[in-house]
Length: 321
Image 1 (cartoon, one colour):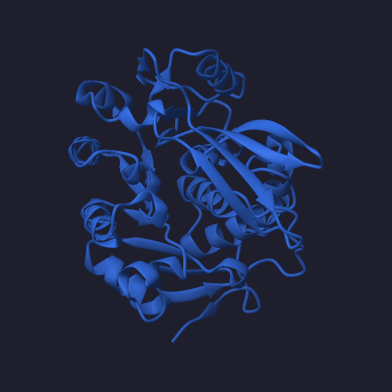
Image 2 (image 1 turned 90 degrees about the horizontal axis):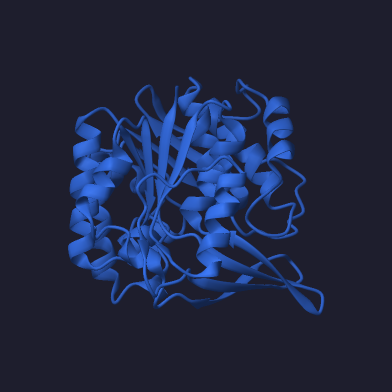
C-alpha cells in the first residue's frame, strides 16, 4: 500500500464569484495532496500534516478532509488558534491576485513537536513539502522539520520539494535561499517553477537551474515552465522539454502548479518514468486551470487521468541541448 504525507498550511479560501464569495479550503501542499488522493488507489494512505486550531473553522477543515479520504496523522490541535485565510480575485485572463490573513495561523506551529512529526512521517513512501511550508515556520522549527524529514528519508521515504518562492512570506531573499538549499540537500524530487528559481537563485536559464539542483544531490527535477510545459532532468534523461497541452483557455490558474506536482508524483509512485509522468501532469494541470479555485472534482480528475497519454512521442517530448 502506498503511504504519502504532505506538510504545510491548509487555509480558508475566499473565491470571488460575481457579487459574492465562495468559501473553500486550499494551500499549496494541500492542493498537491488533493490531486494525489484523487489519482491514487482507494487503499492508499494520504495524510495532511499540519496544526489545527480548536475553533469551528478548524473543525470544518478536518471534517472536509475526512470526507474526502484525507487523514491528518498526528497533527496537533492548538487552543486559541485558527486557520489562515486568503481571498482570490481574478482579472479577465484568469490571473490571480491574493490577500492573506495568516499571522496567527495554527499551521505556523506544525513543527514545534518533533515527536508528533516523527509519528506522522513513519512508514511513508513519500513526504511532500514546499517553500511556503518553510516560510511560515521559525528557523528553529525549520530545523526540526528538516531533521525529521532526514530521519524519515533514512528509513526509506522519498522527499519531494516545491520551492514555491513567495517573497512576501520571507524577511529577505537570502533567508529563503539558505532555508531552501538546506532542504534541497535531502530532496529526492524537486518541483520548482521558472522564472521564480531564476529570480531567487540567479540561474540564467532552466538548464542551469536543474544543474544547480542536481549538484546539491537532487536526483530528479521537474521544472514547471508555465504555458511552455516542463523541463525534466533525471538519471537517464539529459534534459527534456515536455510541452503543455495546447489550446487551453484558463478560467482560473489557482493551483495549477500544485496540481502538476500531485499528478507527477502520483505517476512516479505508480511506476511511470519521468517524461511520461510530466505528460500526465501537464494534462491534469490543464484541467485544474479550467475550474474555479484550486481543487478540481476528484471524479473528473480520475477521468482525465484515464484518458491521458502514457508514453511520449517525438511530437510531445523533445531532447534539449
